[in-house]
Length: 320
Image (cartoon, rainbow, N blue to C red; front, side):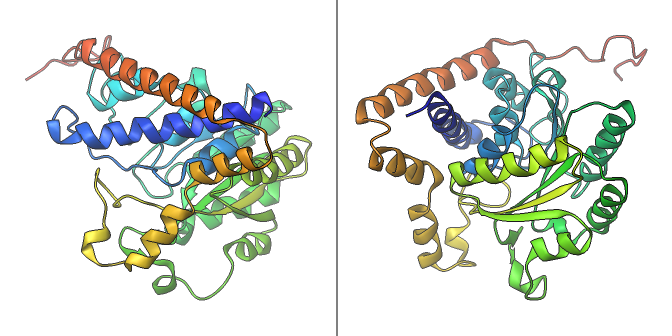
């Protein structure tokens, strides 16, 4: 196993175990913000972010914990943000859907569907005007693909040949409505190609395949080849918003959940690494222990942190 492969697996495992812990502890009422988990979609975040380098910048949407952690964001600062603590990555004032950590390369996430897409294009435009070599990445879901601003942004990016990657995590659902009931039968990547973007499709649950596709498109954008679109077909194992599952709602057949669990990106990566004799069981046992300790440390960090003051420093605002 190469060091890169170990890093990819560990990163996915950290995202999974941290979000599982968030789901378990959410009913304690210490986290009072809405929460959108990415359990089942870890390979998208990790594979794409592994293709980036320092100076590149990433924008997430409302399901952005994985994007932040895949960039090397601090787990404790993420949990502290959900706890509303001053040591959170947004000072405890943003919550789950308003993450920001420029030092990690994560500019912003937002609950506004499509809200960060034009911001990423703006960053890419500024980079192009400066003559730099950075790439901007915006993650969004298949539901966001129906927003007009996404198509306006792709059109403008193609017109100006901007270094931006549109990473569409297509889990087939917008809240509780399946893709087939929202869009005509077509390939999302073909629509992006019609806008003039280089486009690829990849299995979003195969972290090694995602890394390969993302590297190709990011390197192309960095070299001046213009914007790109990467459609990652993946699975969302949790409910749209909240720590539970929507399986009891009966909106998706049980067979679909069974298939999604078999297609788990962690299980697939583990099987591949074991199958090509690139890892042994001892590695997976050790990384489970390491990640478990990191998760416990993240919650301890958050719980020991103070709440933010009533007003941000320098604002002149006063609490009522």
